[in-house]
Image (tube, rainbow, N blue to C red):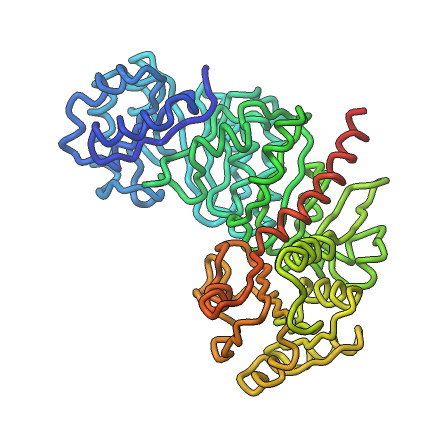
Amino acid sequence: MRGGVCLSLTGRTKEEAEEQLARWREKVDLVEVRADCMDESAWEGLGEWASGLGLPAILTLRSDRDGGFFEGTEDVHDEALGELVRQGGWAYVDVEAWAADWLVDEVRRRGMHVIRSRHVMDGVPEDLEHWMVETAGQGLVPKAACMLGGTEDLLRLVRLHRRITAEGLPPGSYILLGMGPYGVPSRILSLAWGSLLTFSSDPGRTAAPGHLDPGVMADLYRVRELSESTVLFGVIGNPVLHSRSPHLHNPVYRREGMDAVYLPIQVDDLTSFMDLADELSLQGLSVTIPHKEGVIPFLTVRDPVVQAVGSCNTMVRRDGGWFGTSTDVEGFLRPLREEIARGGDPVMKAAVVLGAGGAARAVVYGLVQEGFRVLVLNRTEERARVLAEEFGVDWGALSPESAERMREFRGLIVQTTSVGMEGKEPASPVPWYRFEGDEICYDIVYTPRITPFLEAARRAGCRIITGDRMLEAQAEEQMRLFAARYRELRG
């Protein structure tokens, strides 16, 4: 049976579906016709239409109970699906696990393959392994799509892949994937693990939570080329799907001919994640908010920068454990040095650092090394005090009462909090501060590129440094470390 990258067609009409396919035809291997997304008037002649698309077609009539759009009783659903099956023209028909068995017989009589599907909205159930093996034993393609609620669920899904393979299910005989943001790695790796296919959809109308568009699947992650021997790297954070890091690392891997892929991995539990890292044999990791401090206890070797700043943004597997470093310091300083070389020194050799988390520690350390006087401001004043006293700098509350003190250190203002990050309310951490116009303002948030903080500074005439410049500088160093690890493994 032929599989690969499947495009879920979610248009309301045949014409809309054709437009979706036209955008992505070169990136996909088969299509899923989501009849539940279509107007019922489009069902007439649907099978004949599907047979003329030029790619194998899966018929799906997903009920609302399983995350689809078909509303009606089970009997009404089954009769409607049966009518569509009788039109012919389908390579596969998706028959939900609860649907009547006569539908399975109807599909088989017409020489089509049956995908028997379960959609689980609350994790990975204990009985799923038995159900998948039993269903495959009936000559059907078992499909399980599980909404993953956290890292532990992703770990369970990966282990399920391993177990059903050990049970004898050959590659291409089943479909297993995770839904939602925690499931994204499984969508990228599912073909490599042995799934018949992985789903994608047009970004204008996605078919399920966690779908990536076919271009991202085929070009950025090269899912068709991945295998069990592909070397895995990734970025961990929460949230993480906004991260630009995969767009920086993966093109380099491709250009250098590396059999490697860099994944976005949303992590809510570091203990479960470290088990997952072993299960997947992850070889290198970028670490972002909120885990830069939390990963340190899991390191077997820490370099001097990690020791000094108390945060880690890079992990590399080494000698059975993890080596940790921070490329944030050099990544932060390089764009600052470039801006000073281009536009001149700041109005004073002093800096305000907004925030007192892991990123702020790296920034303060770097600024002190460069000879800046530093003022740390944080909403929780005690955290600002602890950080400032460690590096021998000034501190205060991130509040309007600190506006005048900010002006005394305003040569450089560095924003290190998550305020203004995509997915959060658009805001500045200092809406009460009146820019003089002679500040250099630097926001380490890179999505969006121009945050509300930087927009306000730019309007006031300040020089600005965007977070993408820091990201690119620190990513270059990470790539060097990851490439070295790759060469150790591949010789």
